Image (tube, rainbow, N blue to C red):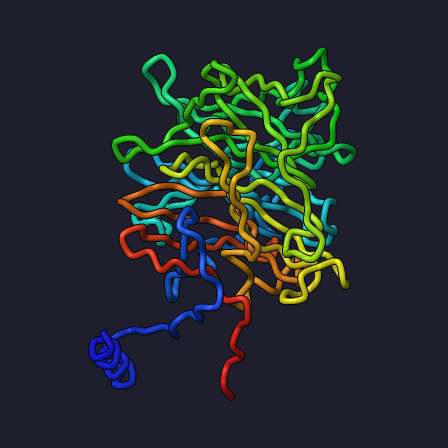
Length: 399
């Protein structure tokens, strides 16, 4: 092994092969965790703002440059052998965070790391329907996650996203048969528990999926003896909800109908401020694997190994026998801001915000927002599992 490594290193020095520096091995992952995820060389950022794209906005009644400011926080799903990336785009660069209108664009890639085509107009946006006017005007549709299910013999694409009406962010649901035309269904909890949580400020729905015969789809799990679709959700904590049809969801609550937190923030850790659910969760041989976005607090209550306010990604393992029970959790993020474009832009404190994870050609492709400004991709090959996450201590480039 030493000879082989030395030979490759020599080729790197001679310029015979393209090499990247070996990752530090100070962040070992448990056997149940996915990793490491590698950023393909020379690929990122994968999607950047387009200042020429124009869209006739039904909400504003005029043409807008809908992806002028930022393109970030992407969902992803496989369709017809290709990966489709559904990314959040913001229009007005003069408005601050929360003051722009968000719409969702669509791009496709055959190999997962090269954009083959990108639609000139958004596929998901605030329209003139009553649901949209109530829950999406004028902040729009933010931060999608997408899964596919087989319903009545046909694929149904289900999106969880944040409907932002400039007052209350709500976890909402939309469905599509082709990824281009979407039906807005409104808040996920609109009819649940007599409407108790229909106006709850909430976001970030991660629907559980499973890979069978090489295809990743939404999967039902057994809960209290019944087969149900399951969604982990939440920003400041992780809760759960179940559904029979992927559109109408009922939160997991106690006898008094109060939300039950499965996961909370941890003082002194990278997720000390937020634990925001990421891409669709995945059933593995070890349990249900939830990927999430942790935000680090400032000062002594945060993890001193990372800058204050940094967004980095963690993993939690839930029991398949009891999907509400966490049986494993990373203490250090497996994925964190490393490159310059992940630490500059709209969110300069550093952000890798994961929302898309798909299984394609025997590998896992992770799509993420870079500093709330661009889209990046990282790849995990289970056949070449390194067992290490991004290094805790990042080496400074030599001058």
